[in-house]
Image (tube, helix red, strand yellow):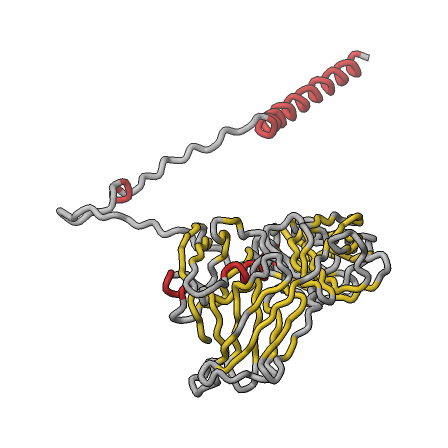
Length: 441
């Protein structure tokens, strides 16, 4: 019993010693695995001394500016350049329908125009962007000025036409049943420039002397009327508005006077037979119902229907003679006047006509009656008048509203008489006085 106890105690002591030995062996291993190890300490690397010093520089070298080149530009990229867009639009009549053939014009660039196609559409170049444009198509009134813009559908509306209705009577108030009627002059409404209209005369026959002119563009009109034995007579100015008829226009057509005389050869004093004698420049329209007459075997003529008052001119022609315009004639309300006329034979000098006046040819321009030409050696040339001058005064009277025919008659006159004329040139008015003379052309 004692021996067995002793053996057990020995086994336990031996086992304890074995476990202690194992623990002593395992503990350092666990400590080495679980405790972090410090980084190894590396000795610092020393650079060579030459690497710490600036690079050597040459002695006494002058400082120099260093040019820094800009970074290279990036390669070009493909881009699409937008093309300038034309200015497009449409022209409509007063009923809102397309107006084919209407002319569109930029007011600030008069040369920039376009015509509307069959659908009323027009196209202007890109330069028209921002211009103020209008459209015209007679007899309708011009479209109101509209500022155009590229990229939108611009619309120009033509203005409705108007009309004039009235009657023609004689001095006693009785209706003139048959006559010629024409438009003498026309100034568009709202425009500084004069316009042009159809001046062709139309025959009117009405027991009450009534007439009506339709499809008139808005503006100011002067009408001319003439009948057999009654010289061309003008109405007062009539202002036509869009879409309205101006009623009650009354034109008094007086009886004319008779001009008598004899046409003879200037050299031989012999009568010139079958010379034509007719009124000259009494109207710029076709409303002249006074027919020419021929001289008889004695060279005598009688032209009925010349103006009873005021200056007028006649033109005398024959195939063997120079044509002659006799101006400054006036019946002075007496019912008759006389003018004996001498004609000169044609020569080899090339001259075909002679007249008495200032030696200027007139025409109608957008600014008024204009000097269209100067005859060399005539009074107008000597006074310094020039082609393109606009006539604004004649003998101190405003000539801006005078029709072409009136200006012509007032500038003509007997040889040696004086006339003062004011013309506008380059924005200035120049006044000159001339002595009328015979002008050959």
